[in-house]
Image (cartoon, rainbow, N blue to C red; front, side, top):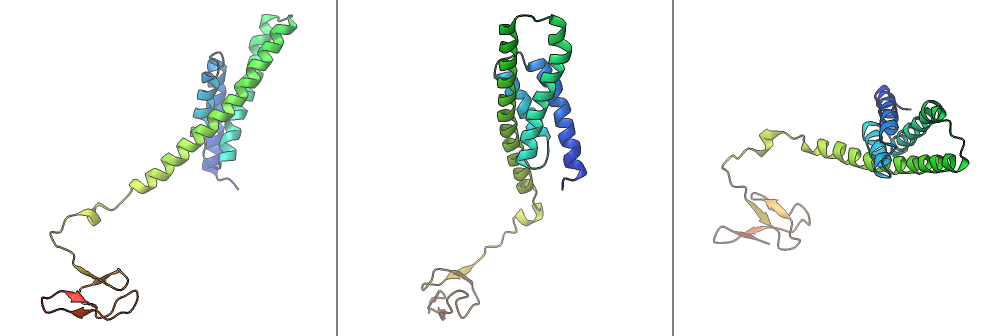
Length: 166
């Protein structure tokens, strides 16, 4: 079940995408791709929801163009009507492709923003050297005071020169 943030962002994406489709529809391929990219980037939620927001914004934009712009032109030429129809169907397909691209970029950006949040106190230099012993039996690092390997259980014995070996 989508939360209110997903519903709001999807509605905003469809409204923005519709307005952009009306303006950018006239640019072949790139215009609808940009529309879909922006709609897919703005919408939150699943990839399906983002894809549908891009396609829906293109469909609504086409319907608005059909009702308010193309009807004023008085198009009686059937060939011109087919060209406009095919142009817009192609635009809807490219808006869908653009919304998938926008969704992927937005998902990646969201994921990377989670990785950038870190506690800076962890990364402060303390000036201390961390020492550990590597078990010659399994190669796992062990604390310097360990008598047995924490992984394989092999005995770690102190050498005469202060080093350790099993």
